[in-house]
Image (cartoon, rainbow, N blue to C red; front, side, top):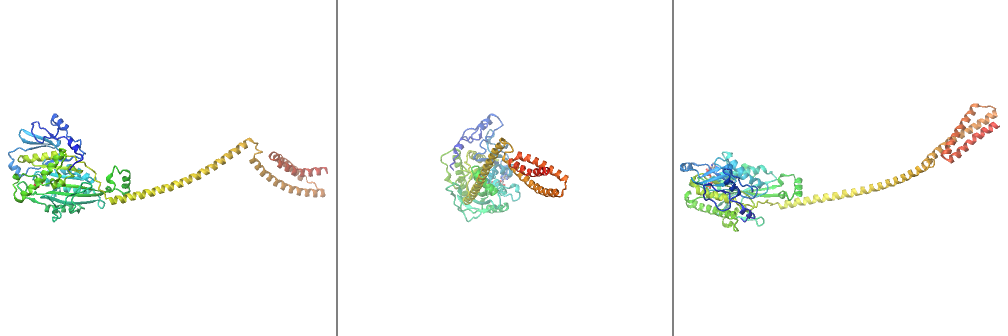
Length: 565
Ligand SMILES: Nc1ncnc2c1ncn2[C@@H]1O[C@H](COP(=O)(O)OP(=O)(O)OP(=O)(O)O)[C@@H](O)[C@H]1O
């Protein structure tokens, strides 16, 4: 039961609020700031709750309703308890002039419902167990004060009577994903210092071992039953209840003679997340979500302790007396461990009993623990009620080093990591291919750009040259003119053949002595046109000019000859 957080637990202050009337009670430890405020400020009590989320053991107190005996024997006595649930305060009255006040995490009156008790005491633990932590919910108190009612009531006739075990399983079943997650239970009793299997009574001395790696307490021989719905769980629980040792004592018609231990095993995978999403969460946030990197297992212990009893009061003898002695011994050793933890002792006597070995993770270990202490309102039981309250007060000082349980299914985690590596490798290869392709395209673009730049430079040079030289001498103009010249030459050739015809006609005319004036007019117009072309060609190209002159001379010469002749 050595706790890494013992230093913190040692610094915790006593939650006892000194009564204005003085008195003794649990006197070790320092007064808290809250206690000082409450003493000075009258009825308003500030509850020290700075460590609400720490690993401190949470303790609630519940008062059982008066039973027939209480009403019969105590009719003349005033109650020994005064409850102020809104202040989470309980006053223990020793007599008319002396009382002591104690602060708890919750104070439940006789009328508190099972639902309310579950929600305040057990539900927060169940929720943390579903998130991957180990948790313990336990009831401690005098015999006949309502531990079994609070923890183990099946509520067969009235579901509102269901106790913490059934409600916790209802919540777990509602939260887990069938097929993906796994829920199983073991149900045992610690009877006369032997651990017996309530689901297989033949197994009557189950070994209690400790995992060498995690330090976690294990019961490897216990029957494990998979649970799929609440009706099945109720049946299993009923089977277990039938096998539990109970006796009729003066204090309780059906007094539990053993500590009952329900072990709820939860195995969850990635909280029902989509696999890919889960992997990415795992890659990116492995520190933030360590419990999400595979399957995780967590464990919830729900314990209904046998009741502490004064042998003289319970009036037991024979075998039942022997049972009572064993019960008291184990509860005493639990009390000693709690005291040692609360006082930051270097030695925690865990090995004194099987109960303290079994609870070594719940007090001073890594589990989140919630304790409900049950008390009787009757003044006849003042001394037992007082000792129960002291036990609860000391337990409140114990701070566990609550730790996320990372009991992964290593094989599945390994497979998932391999998948991640494969997927990352193929992603890297794809990115390398894409990179090569992009580099090639970039290279081609660079070449094209260089070529375009060269062309542009040349074009700019040509433009500069063209701007400097006259248009007629520029190459572009020359090319244009050459085409024009060819066209003109073709036209001149046509004219030449027509002139040849004309020559023939002229000769014929001259020979025939016939003068055709119209033909002559045509001839003159043609000469004028040719002269115009000659002028244009002369401007365009000297070569053209020469040719034009040459072809012009023929008709002019012919005309001249004609007129001269
Ligand atoms: N809060 C309650 N409301 C109604 N009935 C209660 C309540 N607490 C206890 N009882 C009744 O008181 C009787 C004794 O309760 P129970 O058997 O749960 O006590 P116990 O602490 O488990 O005793 P033991 O240690 O001897 O087993 C039962 O009949 C139970 O139904």
